[in-house]
Image (cartoon, helix red, strand yellow):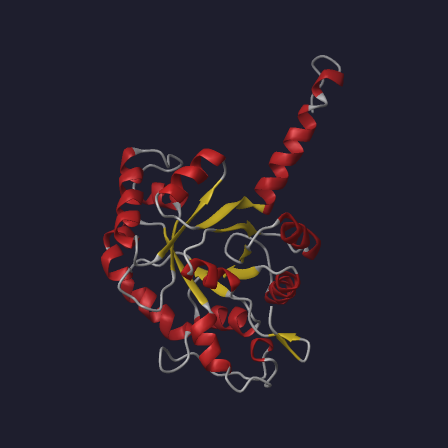
Length: 267
């Protein structure tokens, strides 16, 4: 991680690894706990997706979690609640490695997102050099570095984005198309059934079009799904979330108690 006068510059390790053809591994992160974030780093994760859509993180909490990620050598990708300009600027000015934006429905909306997230000549992002990402005004080359290093990912989680996938993959500043099987299944009329043939066909379509043009991401929760997706060229992998992993670990631990509980005793 490069630093200047003790202030982190960028941690764009994940973007560099993806561009080098590597597979990177992370997790959604929903709770305000630098301690748990440190445990992810110690376990060898490459990135965290700090969740401002379904999590309860404030801007200040996100900035401190970005610091934690940097200290642990992880990239910080922020899932924003939407594509509002203020929400994009808050997290990028705080020094996030990238953004992951949900709920968009067309390539035109993604191009508008790029306008907000990139500085001239790639976009029209508002300048604020007295921010953490710019070393509080100490980085002469900040705008060029930010344009080059910031990772931009969008969710493909509705039928409209699947239908517009060709145009989406033609946007040069977009780095990752992130497949969201849960929301996609609902959009296609099969809520909760990500294995429905219609959902599988839509996912296949996204992977087919994006292959070799964009990095592809998704969320997995078991080794079989991981193996299948990586074999098909999906290299930005989110393994569940902090809450999902803790729930599974706690449930597994509690299963050891069963032989010692009184018969019929409730949990």
